[in-house]
Length: 320
Length: 261
Image 1: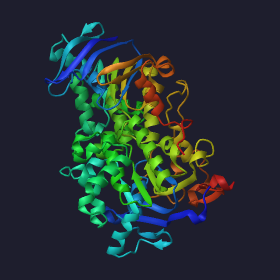
Image 2: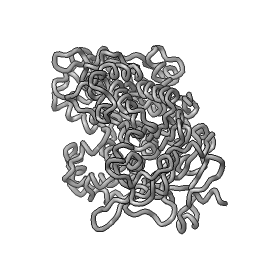
Image 3: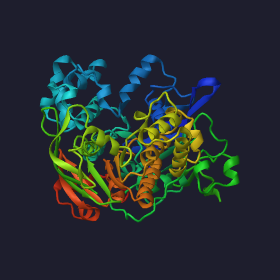
């Protein structure tokens, strides 16, 4: 399914550390290597504090990695000059969790939608109205919305505007950070259907960050699971239901509540909590909550290795 | 134990937010109320607790708790029930705990508000309760500030406080929505144990259909202030009466569910 020549963006051993009080360092991302393929969706799941949002911010160059590199079509994009960085943003756009916070409340939808194009000098002001109508049509909203203000719209409609604005520059990569988490379930499903449709039409790559593994696997070609700044498992979305190997991925699946599940079923979730990213354990990051912890896990951090085509796992279980 | 008859609530002069709500609950039963934002689900439990915010008012209907009408009670009588016979846990206890006082001080104050108990005994009672609610280092927790605890630990403190006087009715407003999935699973399991161990009746309001369906003996689905589906959990899940419930159930992402790609 994945062809090496279709890699459009490559994260190469990304490390991000932040200085913390008392001379400590907080490691938000630790040696993250991921690949984004043309026209495919990479879903990143994990709990709060696992570094998934920090990764997204670095990916679209809002932050700079401490170590490692991002290669976009083979070109390093970490060390670009300001001008080049600005030009490169055309290729990658982002949709945030709360669109309200990303819109200027005093701007009308028509101006919100066309601002990026006007900024890049790609749209003559005379054609704004036409373009806004076209973009609204793309996200299945009525053309009259162009004269509204963001506060006159529902959360789902605002998220559609965010998507339309992000796609107005025809980027190759769309990064969504918890883009549906603030929405009700039925609206969430509509947004996912829209993203999937637009991806097919335009052949864009999507990086979708989310805490809900059931949602992510339903439309991702590739799913990466993060824990405490580490990528612990990467596998095709269609295999999440049956083929997971890492104990943490299995714990995430075990913590899901399905509508039809038997009420007598015991919930198999892991105990304890994520350790602080200020003092990472020497061995495996998951060792204090893992039911399979061995001596080797305490001594040595498992590296990520391929166990099947398109399936990588960072766990010592795979080697015994 | 709890009967709500034809309850209608409105804020100020606006359209009622909750219309003709009915519910009947036995001792030790768990009722899940689901609905999307603005459906009036939180208003139900706030009305039972007598804690409608601002201009909120019960304009019609009655709430019977242990065969006594709550709406006829004076503020003082209602307050006596709260915290002892019925109690509430919130989405995030961070908002209900005072950030600049240690947990212990607040917990002891809470206990002493509801019973005349010397401080050392109240302290001991609090620590015992924390330990029972799976916070083994009770003493440590008592000496911590709320911000020093994780979200899951804070929620356990909230549950421990709410369960101190072994209420017959526990009202839970989105108790797991602010938590991570693995922590959510731990808290849901704990709520199921409360019923088994203390025979506490629970009304849980949540937008997570999976959690609602796992816990609830009865399930109530709300939309725009009205009940659109109500009944035994299996009946509602397997044979929903309204189109809305059907759409909602179909939209829940599930592992065995629909794949888009």
